[in-house]
Length: 417
Image (cartoon, rainbow, N blue to C red; front, top):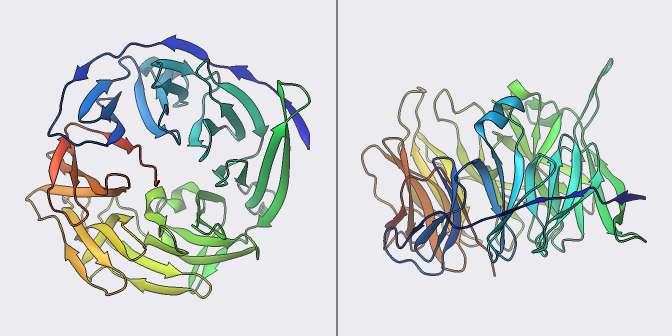
């Protein structure tokens, strides 16, 4: 256990909304999202759009649990060149329109599921940020971290350390539990880190063997007994092959499930049951999209079923409930220059029925479906002529309409309750 002194506060920048468009494309109530258009951050709320930045190049917006804060990574062009891609972390407080720039650049921002607190990684240092309307306060937590995930109560984290190279070979990646509490002084917190598990290396599954270097994309099962993750080898190897697996928290067992690319959205738990879906298959997508199959698996015992028809590839999906999945699917391609035309299907894992819910349109690709819980809608991205728009429909595909145009990235405020 150790005490960590308050590291710094953030720089406050007063902000005024730059531009408001009364309505984009049709009224859709109850929806809120942050999106990036031509590098700038925008807010979509109740069919109105507000530009939030004009002098920054923004990436990776992410919402706080209550929707009052937006965190995002950003840089100016000059800073990006000088700092070799290191990103500043910014916070936007929607009720006051205040923006804060953290004093430490970083990546991998994740909000607490219960509080207006976030954590991020800078180098290999994990820091905690407590947010108030007066500004964020930063506390260092621990070093040597490669990835992490919050516990559902917001009071602890599971963190991982990547393997390191030594003269006699690679070490193994490790999993830890990190907790913290207030110290005796207001500017201090006490942090406790305990080792949980060392992941074997290589990870083997049938005739597949992958070197374990890092653990990425940690996600809790609904019953909090399992953590899914991607085991990645060296950087170039990881472009073609990784292992998706699950870690049993109580029994301290790691179970490999299949091959997967390094894509965080390609592993998702069912809403309320310990059933995990993933898009499995080796081979990078830059040389054509093939061998990408939607696989649904139970754990203890492990039961596996593949739902992608022969000759097709799946690229994105979202659970509707514990039995139904919306998946973006198209015919396999073997040429990098060949257009991959995908559209949306609903897969019923109980009856095995698969129904196309969005009709194919020439030279248009539908991808990134997501269930919007409160509105009971699905949203997806449609790409045509290198331009991307955002669409919304009922879960069965009816009443589909475009709500935003010229969007690079969208992050919905999407609480489950």
